[in-house]
View 1 (cartoon, rainbow, N blue to C red):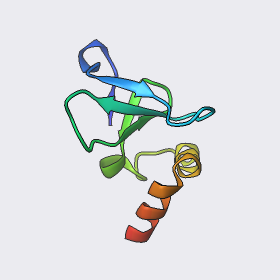
View 2 (tube, rainbow, N blue to C red):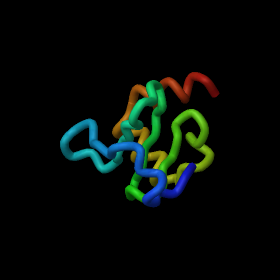
View 3 (cartoon, rainbow, N blue to C red):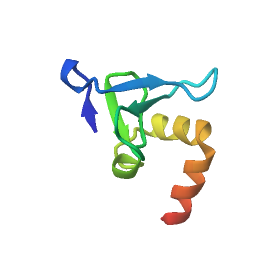
View 4 (cartoon, rainbow, N blue to C red):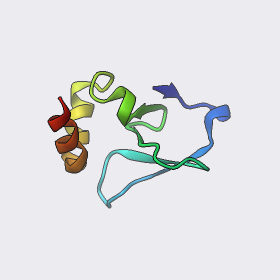
Length: 77
């Protein structure tokens, strides 16, 4: 998890689907980095922070908007 400031802006926020609440990140020059933000201030990395650093509400919303990842992570536990 990192906090966004002027020095860490080497990425772009985007939403995968209209109506989504979660922001996904596109890191410039990096492939395979899966990260999300709920407020554009705190960034959570799927492979390092999910689910332990997600608040319950964040995890529930993430699972709802990203059923593929919820299913994948559920099978690995």
